[in-house]
Image 1 (cartoon, rainbow, N blue to C red):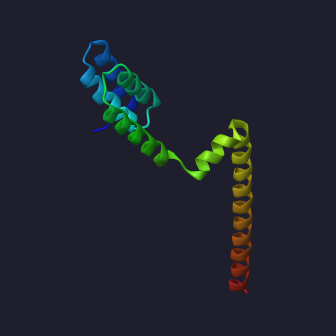
Image 2 (cartoon, one colour; image 1 turned 90 degrees about the horizontal axis):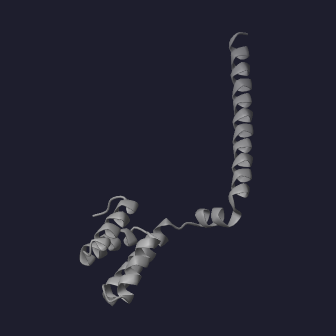
Length: 122
């Protein structure tokens, strides 16, 4: 069972506000396992208020960490550390390199084709 993380959080909030704490907890558990930090916080609060068990909180925390680990990558971590402006500069630089490489390759292929045509017409 999954669905949209925000929708799950909202359903959990609605159930919580209606006093349906067990159902709210189930929605928050699902969205926490999908990496939603707010849902994890709601489960922690429920645990602190005696509305969730230690096992519920541990399950949510483990699922949250697994989800975050799955979404982590060296490239993503580097992008976060560089900041938005540096990412834009790097992307523009990479785009220029691709364009130059493509133009150079096209020019080489055109020259080779021209030479082959010249030999063929002699």
